[in-house]
Length: 314
Length: 105
Length: 193
View 1: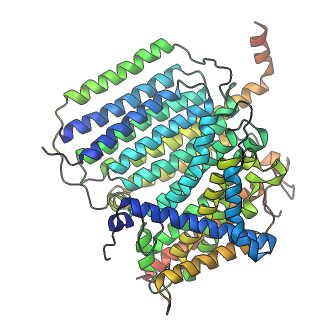
View 2: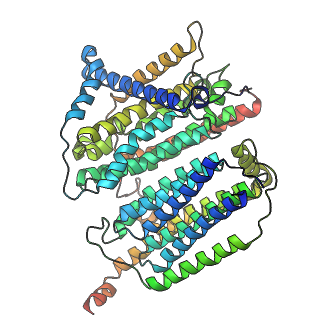
View 3: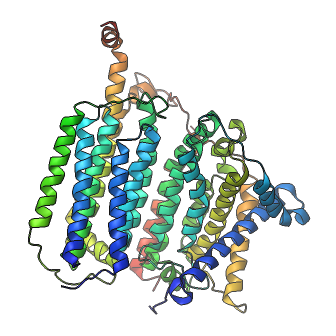
């Protein structure tokens, strides 16, 4: 395996971090724009709406509640975008990751589990019922999606015999992993929408509880959380392309173009399908996750394990 | 400063975590808080095992395996602790007479 | 004997260690149960940071991952069982605080004295290039027995925990003769039955 240096080594730490943050914000903006277009059906306004919305939240006056737990609330609000960017730190950009650790997949997973704490804190902080109910709903949802997500991530690592995302990219030179692990690909996208509590998994921020965890957020806080969520969804699309769709691999066009093209396709597919499915209740999703997704992922991992033994990925 | 001093500093941190954990586990009345004390003790074990691995025998995996075992011990402690707490709570709630006598006192 | 960590790494390790201890003390000082739980999480995350500096990447992220989930679940129980979860009306729920503090301090003192008086051996060997691989090969090879025992232990824990915590058995769900076509559950679940 040729030794690839990390982005931080190649460009210096500060430019690399800036690049990753910029990439994340770009991904988040694209996701929000596509989302808006799909929901309203007006392409012209969709492109500017995320920027407009962000500016509106930026100047909006903040409101607060009686006796909030300000410290924990703020920690939760700031953690969401920070974790989204940190999860991007192990997603390859131009074939390199910001951090090249020997456990990239677990890092991505850990950033997403820290989101459990962050979202619950956003629900706990304002000392308001709908927000707290939303926080609890997110934990219930977390118990549902966590195991299938872990199994989906680890299946890709299993095939590449490495937890490093750059190694996983290299292992897909001949065959994209989506061919041999379609179940893992689908489960990864489902679980990723679930941890970003978006689309069919938006119950923690559901309309039936007046916006749930988002209900008491205003101004910059609202912007940070919404942006963090969008960046997380964009990072997920980039991670899905990396793990299952061969990253930059593709004929004729240069690598980065293919990479962005594939991310765009995943985002459009995710939003197109996700916005057409009704919101799932977490209590129902838990049973589906444990009775259907976990066994399906175990079978998928078994198949991939047998293929590894047969030498299919060499 | 030598490596040994760094190791000793880290082990002191581990000792402090264990000491705080022992205090918590002994002094708290709520079962859940007692469990947090025990978790802190195991947290100290994590620090000690990892620093022993790094500064004494990094060539052998034993220190790392010990950290894994400590993590599992923590998970088991959590599960059994909460299960026992729920069982006790359920039994007490059924036993309303007992609670009423306590209230009368 | 030279220094294997850079100066910056030594400072980072010591600072993170102190943060871990302060967060650990905060667990028993703060009034709010949510804050206590997240102080404990902060202590674990600081320890995970120590692991990162010591080049134990996998164990660092796995500690962060497991402990975050654990604390997220723990906070639910804390708030469920404690009378004063948000700490808005401060109260103390301790017994024999002075004796416990003495025992805790004694434990700390004994270990610390031992740590600073023992003649530590020099470092044997160098860290592997990839500590994650070292651990993986150990638990899937030379130390596999540990992993087997852990697996069985965790499975037994799951079964025992569920048995202890649930108050409904199959007779509650399917009736006295176990002949109900669909279980009578308080929450229906999402599977078609």
